[in-house]
Length: 184
Length: 111
Image (cartoon, rainbow over all chains, first blue to last red; front, side, top):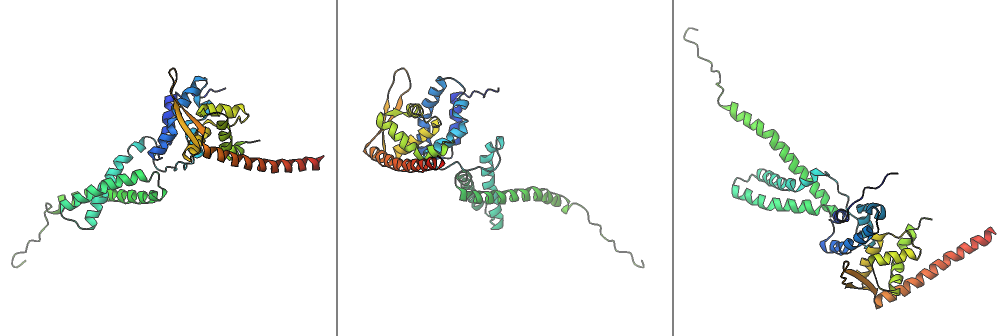
């Protein structure tokens, strides 16, 4: 007989909190208010918490369902460690989109491009965060990420190509036909 | 018989009934429901139901400080809650009466 891994009440509470992270702060605080006491009392009775209450994620799902709150939005995208990098991607994405727009709109004044970036980066971060809970924004978020990824790909491909052409452009001597002498 | 679906329908009524008897805090209500025979009731479901009933205006809530243990949040019925309990109880009695009638007919038919 296998024994369930015993989760410490604090760890259990943290996982419940994480599973409720997409809720508005007031709703989440409401649901978490009684959690500490509840877990402490159940833990005091003995036995592994997960066996007695089920996994924290299931607890959170039951809790929000009974409270009349919507179920958690299924997150698509990278999980685990990659997820930590998402905010960095949002910033980079904003810069790439600003850069892409600068090129497409033929913006030659750096100040304007900078302004674009100042607007695009927070907008990208906002989009990234809100798309976790708003299904409609999820597609916008995906489109922006795709555009930024293509821009990045374009950058990675074009920069070496551009670099090579400026190197070879004027330094290689062009063979010149020498005119033949008279009588040649 | 899997009582999960049944519980979902009557959990509000059951929680209101428990609180009409005596005010209670979350885990206390869970225990009283189980002692009454609703063994499958989930802890999280009860806590969520208490929060929802409170936000809907059916319950009062107050904190009881305690020296040895944590402060406990107690819930009780207010007038709106008592009205809701009475209505739900009537609904339950007529519904379960109808089901009982059907079952009696089945038993008589089988006999």
